[in-house]
Each structure stands twice: as structure tokens, then as C-alpha cells.
Image (cartoon, rainbow, N blue to C red):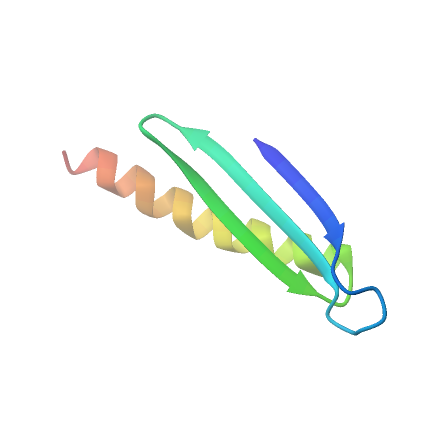
Length: 63
């Protein structure tokens, strides 16, 4: 798992960007979210990653 936090255009709102990548067998799942705070961006990333992981696990089960 890799997580990156970065500031995008420091003078504007919605400038905290968090990207998250998770290596799973056969592929890498990736999420990137931007919001007012790193905490909010991280929460959005985690929620989105949960959905991707659930879909990936369902796909594996149906093989």
C-alpha cells in the first residue's frame, strides 16, 4: 500500500490531494481524492478503496 499527500495550488481551496494505491494479485487499485483537508481527502480515499476492494474480491470469488 502506498499513500501520498500533496498540496495542489496552495493559494486555493480544495487543495489537499491524497492518492492511495494498493497492490493486489494481478493489478494495482488506485484512488485519488482532493478536498479542503488531508483528513477529509484520506477518508474519501478509504471509502472509495473499500468499494474497489469489495468489487475485486467479488470478481475473484466468481471465477
